[in-house]
Amino acid sequence: MWFKAENFENLVQMAVSSGDAPDVISNSSTFQDFATNGIIMSINEYLEQDEEFQKVNEAYDCLFEGINVMGEDIYWISCGKRSGSRLIVNQDLMDKNGLTAPTTLEELVNVCKTISENGNGVEYGMVIPGASSPFERWIEHSAAMSGVLPYDYVNGVYDFSGYAEIIEYVREIFNTNGMLPGSSSMKVDPSRVQFSEGVVGMMGNASQEATVLTDQFPAKCNWAVYDLPTLTGEVVGALQCDPNNGYQIVSTSEHPAEAWEVISYVGSEEVLKGYLEKGYTLPMSSYMDSIVDKSSIGRMADFSGADYEDVYPKYPTVTPEGEVYRDALWNACLPEGPDIQQTIETLNQTYNKALDEAVAMGKVQRLLIKDFDPMNPSAGTIEYLSE
Image (tube, rainbow, N blue to C red; front, side):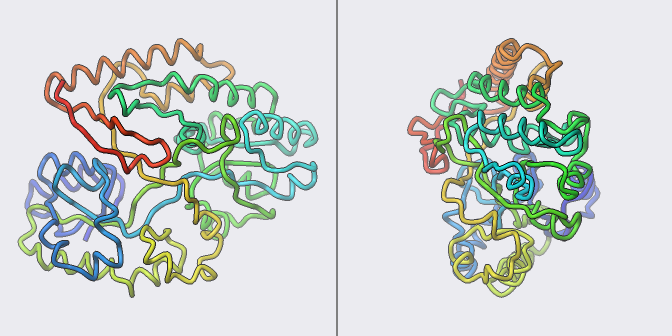
């Protein structure tokens, strides 16, 4: 069994080509490539016969197009999940400044400004690790909860227009000195250290921070977890959570039935209960959620229980000319960054041009969900178009 590591995709492909591949590999972001290229195999027949695994993991309720399923073929089942992002707050700094956690992005700007103004060059409102996937840490998720997405599922096109107002607010945090100096070039671990030392009021991230702030960089401040702020203070779109803790069978396996037995064992109630209660991940199924002793999972419990989380269908992956959208939108957040409206117009052009070309060449299909519900994105009826 292989687990994710650096250069995971290349290592797996090389192992398959040389005949040295393992029977089982962990799920990864390379799923679509692996499925399309025949590196992993469908598990439909094994899953269908394993009623206990179905029950424990609610397998047929956890089928997500483009994530663990392609068409009728099921390739892996998630036995856990990483939560969507939350606002992680230094409660000591909040109390010291007489503040409460912000529910709107406008309030977030003001809270960051107040903490920095009263911090005398020592304490600051927020940190975002600009050198470590900054846009994904929380900005993209606040946008989704505000109903703003990069892809228009109803019409099957990319549309970044809704991000403009959100980016303006993030830029204002920088402009009003609400951001920890150096954030734009900081990596994630140094930003975590700054928060754990108690000199930063807020940061955004998902459930992995529970173990980071208790084990890796134990926090020297009292910290709390809140919902991310949105444009209006209301949640009008689901927050993306990420299915994980799943395994795939490599197509070259000479013992696929035995490989499934391994997957079934690590996804069994007995194994999962101990794994979940150690706080390594969150339950994906309501069955496991109901039997896990939440008093034993530590601060991971702070990230569980949000009824507005869901899994979004995977929209077509394309390669546009120029910057990828997360990099471009983050750069537009910076005070010295490019014009926000021009950035969005350029992304709309480059991404839809790339999508049209990829569809015309047969590389991808256009994804449509005419009955798309932003609060229940996984429940819609998926269509694929070749034009």
